[in-house]
Length: 418
Ligand code: EPZ
Image (spheres, rainbow, N blue to C red):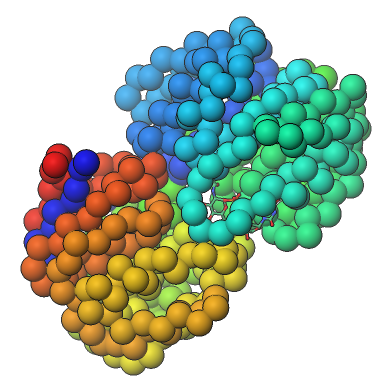
């Protein structure tokens, strides 16, 4: 089993270049099966979820060649596959379920295993199913997910909750449906917009992505295209918060600062200097961190994927801070790991109360999910002594070379194989 070993206490200084957004790339890859054509997609992050997706698509018959962070994909011959063949990769991530909308749009039918993903709550797929049914799909959930539609027809679909996944899945299923589909209460995340932009480059007619209402007018055929994935605002935010946690000075490059407005605002509220450029943000830490309150919300609110790294920063604030997690019901499992390191945190239902400032002491800790794993790395970077982090498979799903990047910023960090 691999571990990350960190000798903490160093202020991180330097530059980080952000790569493509995991949650955009994981919607763009399945979207390619909506056409029988060739694609070139750049700025693909080199992470485990992407490797799994490439494996699934190859098993389905796609031809895929990786050239650095560029993928050449040919989906002309996507043919038969069995659920068993793709079960292993599909159940290791959430985003495998985008193949439901994509294959439904391509073939009018699909069967997939139930998705996996971080254990941060029940994560039902009722809104996805509601969307597919509204478009004319007949759904069978006995053991796997089977959907069949004689003819996909546009529909008005109201999302009871803002759901990134359901919004994307309905977009994928509706781009070749007959007529107009209206998605109300749609998710507005940058990766939703990126996937809509990709679909439009394929010849789809998707309007309103990034607003509460997305309108998709079905087209007969889609075609291949060349595209570059939007930068990952979640990994960018992680490195911004790392500058605050280590009282460092980090320039986060190749980003869209607007996508990080909620993080920049919170860091400034905590007395941390944030300097915005056209495609970069510099964060300069301080000894006098002010407490703050965060409530996670759908974009453009504070992203749930950064509440765990933000929790580490709150440990060092001079006063009481709170996080209210309004998106998932089980996203505070990292608190136990921080308490092992000396943090003073109380969790009551969906609110965590952080009493700072506190010293974090090195410990043997675990990554409980993807973003909690990143939070554990931040805690180790700040803690006195040698921290050991296990369960790295969670971190590797979404962070590319995390220890190399922190090493380049001056951290004493390495990955060891047990
Ligand atoms: C996506 O998950 C991301 N994953 C998550 O990132 C992210 O935390 C989440 O969006 C919120 O931004 C990918 O994009 C692969 P949701 P998703 O549907 O689509 C409930 C990471 O760290 N809901 O927006 O699963 C759901 O239970 C991962 O990169 C239903 O009730 O999130 C949750 O409470 C972790 N029924 C809320 O909606 C449904 O049918 C938001 O979930 C669907 C969702």
